[in-house]
Image 1 (cartoon, rainbow, N blue to C red):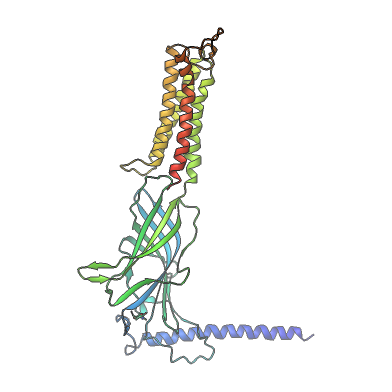
Image 2: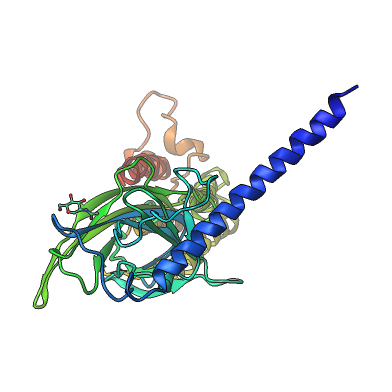
Length: 380
Ligand SMILES: *[C@@H]1O[C@H](CO)[C@@H](O)[C@H](O)[C@H]1NC(C)=O
């Protein structure tokens, strides 16, 4: 059959085409470097000009990962940072390769060979460009405007003032500003790229916080040296609160219920009763003190403080009740004479009746509190 030789020829042609395409990009890069390195054509210290206004720089951000340190109130973002602008000094008029596609680009890995916008992060306390085998950065030069596209991987630490009223169900909004360092607003204008997905993020599920969404804003800055174009992305980061269910809510609520189970221990077993409530009380106290060491310290009340305080108070009241009932008259529901009406139909004494139901009253109030608490924290 003649199919096999035809396949061989076809695959050879394909390889040849691929090879030619790669070679064309290499040719373009050669050509680009020739322009960038000839002093009469190009000077990387001089910014490109725009006859009708400032040079537009469009920004794209892709957040790969975030780390939130709520003790120092610092957000660290690991992102792909891209800028697009037009440099009319780099035209591909001299292209000689016949196989060059109209949307192909030349790749420049030495980004300092060309002029690039000097965008910086005013709130950034530490900005690092990732370096592995080579710096993770490149410029693509296209043939149509805006012809320059710079891409790099950046890690930026920036301060984010946080509010912990809803802790550990809080959502924080952290604004990251981007501004030109040297070029005033009439020389360079910053904008976020308007194409869909220009600002995006990976949904990271294994951190203590995750990105919930973002908004963008302008923050043009007027300083003594001029007005600078500034853009801002407000990242909404939400704390992953599900770990707290197992580490704090379920244990504490179980301890409170355990303390109330002492109601069912006969009054004669006073030591057992006292032990159960005291152990629950001490366990909640220890748990909340332990938890406080990992929680941010602030001057106002956090949601979790209300929960822990209320749980501790409920068990403390139960403890008081157990102690008082030992010294006073019958007030346990297991002691029939206290609550059951006497045989001749006259009601039992109201004091012991009230005291018998005191434990249930505390438990019911605690249940009501838990409902209100759920409603409260879901508003954050
Ligand atoms: C030049 O300035 C005009 C007016 O501000 C703007 O619309 C245009 O995008 C700018 N061109 C470039 C390449 O920056």
